[in-house]
Image 1 (tube, helix red, strand yellow):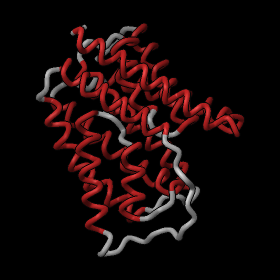
Image 2: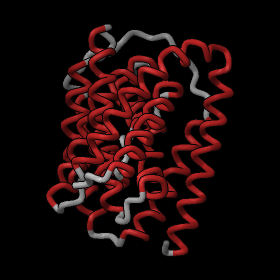
Image 3: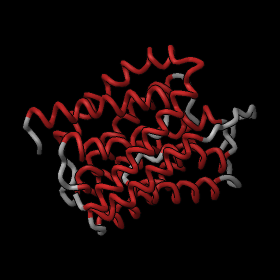
Image 4: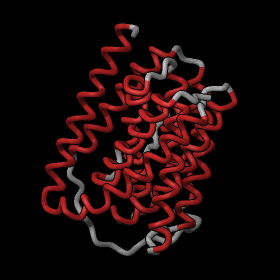
Length: 260
């Protein structure tokens, strides 16, 4: 476990940055956690960076979920089924990822980052429709979507919010706003499953997880008032953030190809 002050402070700062960006722009921010751990905090093993990132994302998602749950925006039956099947998929995906060389895994991770950045550039229309209720006819679609998204999220070691939200919308018909709130249970479940799998191999550093979580709480608190002020500039900010993710993806790919 890391006990040195400088890495812990850098991990705290990294957690704050990720949480701030997530609060301002929604899904996609968690993919920056792994590059920050590798190239700012100085974590040497990509598998450790992914394990720590997954644990931090899970804890931050639980904090955000509590707020949405109090506001009554979470559709619990759909959320629970998606999370359970997603967790099973995440275990399989993360087990496969653990067998892959660290630099090769980073190259694949860079591709996933690029996909996240590209998805953030797409404008999603707000559609008014009745909120769904889970039923027997819907359950197979939700289960399959959860397992597929969970496998990808577990393999790449990301929260998977950019996949979970459209997965929920496609399989249940819920609105974007409801899917964003409901997705947080799956983000937490997938992150916890991935982190647990990596912890079995000794690839989760509790000190760094704690530091990122503390920083995440501060980042969320700072981001809430900024998000309200962003207002009409939110779309521009999201586009700029997507550009940042694409640039970081290119940097991660270059470092992975260089073997450094």
